[in-house]
Amino acid sequence: MTITFEQIVDTVREFPIEQQEMLADLLRSWHIQNRRLEIAQDAQESLAAFREGHFKPQSAQEVITELLQEAQDDQA
Image (tube, rainbow, N blue to C red; front, side):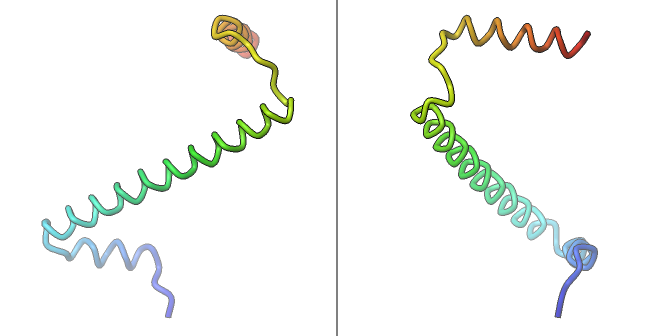
């Protein structure tokens, strides 16, 4: 049996407010945990790419200057 998203929402609307708040807290925690895992994975991939020579070392000022230039180019 498959439950649709709409059915879930309708069911949650019937919950007492305290249970709705508990569910909201759980969802928020799961979302934060998943984002942290995504960020960690992205960081590992970026470090691996850097170590493989796909990126060159740059100072913070060089990166900022490049980003500002790209932003100006996008606006043009």
